View (cartoon, rainbow, N blue to C red):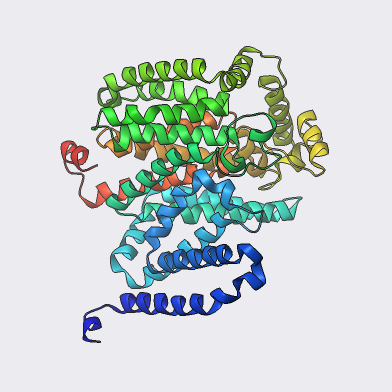
Length: 468
């Protein structure tokens, strides 16, 4: 017992919990085949692993933050329906652990209080509160409530990420990049749902992930690793590049391709950032061109699917591209005219545009229920939350880039995060990304960097560059 005399109460709790778990597993193991058949031991193993992770997260909320971001490329694999969601369970455990830590960790509490002195955090809170208030006038209360719960969860994720210290923030993004890298081979190993894009059209998407969203997430991971985490390792990012480029290419996502090509060019327009990017952008384009050319020759079946979709970018009248998008956008404009100030209510885009858009009507008939998306973040926000919500969202973006640009000019990780934000802005033109988790992880990262540098009294830029 003397060996435990110097241990903290939390460590003793951990050891006691592990011992109790081992005893329970030993007692239950002989009966697993009776309840689960041949899969009984594996089910028990899954339960044990889940309990171990849950206990670890409750003891250390930072682990939950890391897993929340790292699990994103595998979100489809751990979600078993609208209710049984691995991401929701992981988020709930993380939020509980974070709340408990606020009660005992004075430094964390001070950082949490400082967070709400940042204009970006306050405006994001105002946007989410307005989103919640729109339940009062939403026609479909069920969809509105689900959307509100989702946005509250995204706000919680933003707060958790923004409360991380610099070393943990770097670890979060390193784990995300590693997870994104692993998701490429895993995409061909994990079971593919019968109705997924991968099984129907051959477009790559691990475990049923939406190809467009997955492609843009992979583009963010690619830019973060090239310009944020491994920018000074020169050769390493280019050795990793073929895997990320293949993932984007195999999804045949037009939005992903545009984001991949346009993001570095747009970043070069940011004052003082061009000097930080420098020749790396040219090397990036050269490496990407060579890698895509090799893939086009070596993997003809992927090339055929990708080129078939890429060429439709120039077919303005195609219902699969701009013409189809315009029907949704026209319906959104008509709905905005009907509810200009307050909007139709969060989560009510499909209900508001059903009588105004042929695409929304057709999708709803095919799905057997009312459902569709704006495929544009600005029109989507204006339709559901009105001009008030759109103004709040635009103000959030203003403070977001106002904070992100100065940080990117002196921090490698900040540069990678800013490139990720540019990908988000490009994706938002054609994708409904206003409630995408990655967007709020980026928001939280900007706030974390802002708190880090403000707490240090804005030291010299060279010092920041070396540390980040």
